Image (tube, rainbow, N blue to C red; front, top):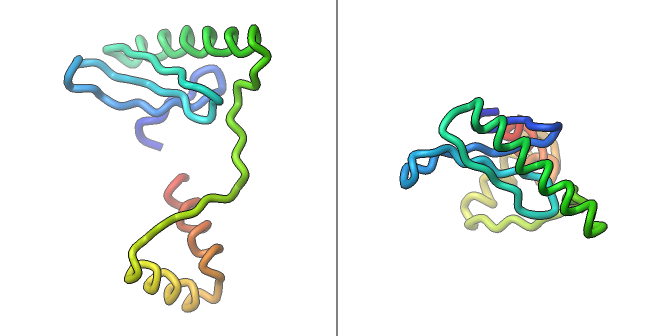
Length: 110
């Protein structure tokens, strides 16, 4: 996946911040914010490892679970036309709208 690095077994989304001329990494899937900045890939790796270690140490000190847990349920709002088109496409595939959306998300997130 573009713009994603794995550091210490955790995935981080990487974006370029043109205002400061640096890359910003932010860990996803953690129970709190842990971000880092650098001007190179090697720097991102190094700063990411430091940021993750500090975050995990703080969680351990405070007895906080560092991993965000997801329920598997969320609500999505779309306009009526898109809702109708998605329902038709799901019916044409012979699957529920829920399964259709799940498959689309799985494909996009791969």
